[in-house]
Length: 513
Image (cartoon, rainbow, N blue to C red; front, side, top):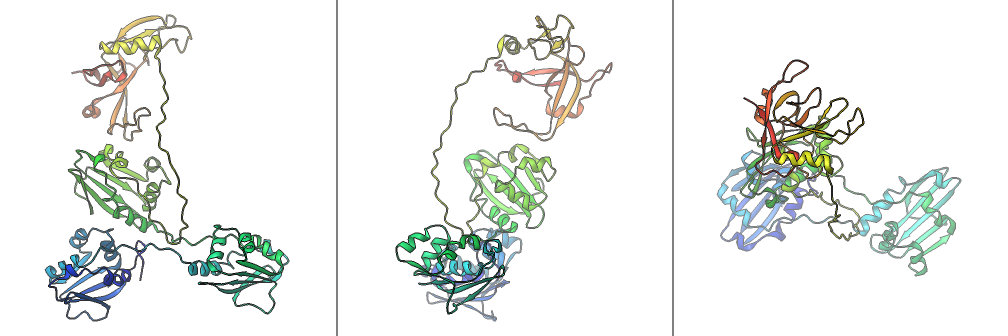
């Protein structure tokens, strides 16, 4: 049998007796069958308010038989796979009386996977099974010794490490006269020593441990053997992907999706990948496999491992986009809000993982009072925008016009004191298409892509003294660039009704028709 999310199919069947709800089985007299690919066949008999479950090869006489592979069966039972979607897509099949089978949903309490914690015996077995692998020949140079570990109490035993010629061999039991013998009264104490939770000298001074033979060998054990690290279950990319999407609906944050009516498709490629779509409407979220014909936003990731690294915080999503290993289709703004729509993914704890120390956190927003002054030159330029005017200043020596206005000519390095009004209309000299928008460093906001960024030679300006601003989104493909004596598309500004003395007092430029 295979584990999915740390659970086997037999774990679910073995707990059915404890989870059985008599009140949910009132009036039911039937036999149900389960044909689980990879896990075998099981028969569930319900009669007289009691229930019996058995593993069998014969499912004859069952009123209904459920068929599924082990992954989908486990996923449905622990809430990682949507039962309705699994049934509609054919991943879970029912043969027989579906109505009667539906009554089983009321017969059992929800299955909750038991938290896997290594017991003392598990740790002891793992410590000695890895002893030879942890042997460090450089720390045992010239040694010809036998080291016996006599571990008492529940989970204990006797093992001897034979070290000679830079090699180590481990056997159970002990020789007549080991070079060094460690006696520990309780196995739990030895586990605590090996995990660094207690000091071996404390055990010795308390009489809970002793050393026989050559004490100096015992004191060198840290050089002879590498530090023991408890085994941790490794989650595969597929395990992570299944858990990420299995918990997506639970992590949905309605307040972050206020008034949102959207479909977000995740197209995850590579081993362990798949397609899932989150349907968000009226403050609710539903997840289905596959994708609609035209999702609002679609995230495409070439390799599932890359998406796992993003979700675990090991890599930056913008790095994947810039490297061409991921892309966004549709409304980019929604993709950039995913951190508000869904809470952060927290991976499941692994079996055998040492208990982590609780961290105390004090959340505080640091406020630094700062005032930024524009100065007289830039201030005059910005204030003029309130009046729908574009002012600039001119170098008295070379005649260069500066946009925006600046105190000193960049070429002549003398004060530009002559002011004049330019524009507000002009011709396009150059336009850039922007497909990936970085967040504004001050507001954190991003523009919907694609958009166009213009360089406009305003009326009254000469040479390359152009004014940079946005173009109306629906006119991006109508703009023609100008050069030398060839005029570009004529454009005019569209002003905001409320103007505050900012470059964004101009919404954008549009074609001057």
